[in-house]
Image 1 (spheres, helix red, strand yellow):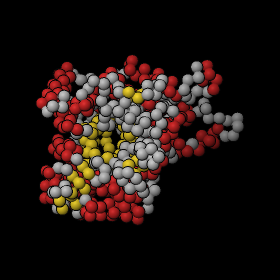
Image 2: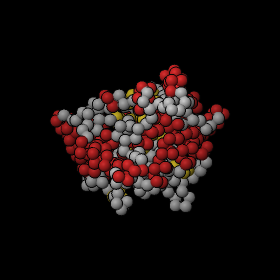
Image 3: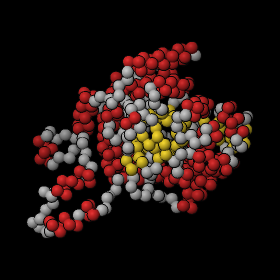
Image 4: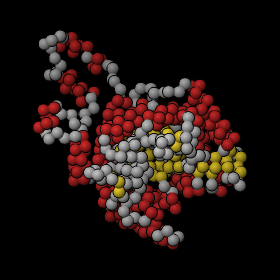
Amino acid sequence: MHKGFTRKFKPLEILTQEQVETIWSRALDVLWVTGVRIEHRKALEVLERNGCCVDYDQMRVRFPQGLVEESLRKVPSSFRLKARDPANDVILGGSTVHFTPFPGMNTVDLDTWEPRPPTKQEFIDGVRVLDACEHLGCFGSYTPYFGYQGVPPAMAITEGFALQLTHSTKAQFMEGTAAGSDIFNLQLAKALGVEYCGVVACSAPLTYYEDQIDGLFRYVEAGFPVACGGGHVMGASGPATFAGSLVLDLATDAAPVVLCQVLRPGTRTGMGDIGFAMNMRTGSPDFGGIGTSLHQIARAQLCRKFNLVVGALACGISSSKRIDFQCGYEKALSVMTAALGGANLIWLHGGIYGELTHHPVQAVLDDEIAGMVGRFLQGIDVNDDTLAVELIEQVGPIPGNYLATAHTREWWKKEQYLQKFTDRLTLPEWTAAGKKSALDYAKERVEQILATHKISKPLTPSEEEEVQRILREGYDYYRSRGLL
């Protein structure tokens, strides 16, 4: 099992208990007074039978407070997500933190920084690099890319998922029910003996389209876990204030949680937060802004009221268009604060600008961020051995030193995080080694991975054939509907 990192101290909280109760109370008011638009006849009927007030003409569902709170309490506080290799199963929830990639529509040229669609080989290379990242616990939706050159749009999600399953054995999240792609994604997962956490995404404000709810029904029927989330842009598709944004988020995400629990009580369910502030000058989301950190810490604190698994999904990206200082500090700050705030799943690896660009070199650098954040979460051990009082007495003042002691040899690696692919040289060593930057080291690491990395459990010939059969079935399905 991939253990991730365990936070050994209380999570950072920025809301008072009174504020937590107030925000939840207002979210429950929104669910009952305003309601949520769910464009799915079957879902409307199910929710009406379970006590919701349904307006079929407007496809508006109003949720009674008691049903919402009862449903939230039925959600497991933690759960296992089964990977293709059992050694890569993950446990989500509690004080555990896992890192996952941030997807991109395009790759980026490291010389010109111009984005472009990846080739199929670049997609595969991206999967292999992510599989090799030590601190990456599971794959997220559309990772590393939304598709690749030459793949038909209707098959992009399923073809990409097949490549993920072929070239990695890590656990999987999967969003994307466009044109029914989850039909074939589920077949792929079952054929290879794995499961994935199906993502149900809202369309802000307060709306779920038919394809997302179709996916929810299929995930629940398959017994797979479900991640309910999405998000909005503060000031555009949601309130500009943090408090109002959090009210809208909780109301929106609680709706599919209720549906999951009335369909199958105890369904493994989590909530994800991918909200951004708006850059009012450009109209685009403010990727990497410090407001994202405030929002995600508060959101995690609110979810702890019901012990929900919570994902911080707006981390791991920047407004920078290249791998540079801005990209580094915006990603590191948002990831560190999300981890301190109690998030269980954090999007990080590979994302550069928004959801528009991703690169394996960035993923390698991000794995160092994940390792450093993870070490911080482990805190400080205080016991007789680490207090080292007897050792301090033995060494005494100058000329005593600790370098040659058995205590130092035993503890220095345990206490420190040792970066593997960034510059830790002295100035003379750095000069003699060619004055390499962190970017240079990351490029070398990617080359090393692509030359040597092997997955822990390759597909068997029969599994490969089954994957191809399902893909052929998918092509036939979309061809018959005029989508190819």
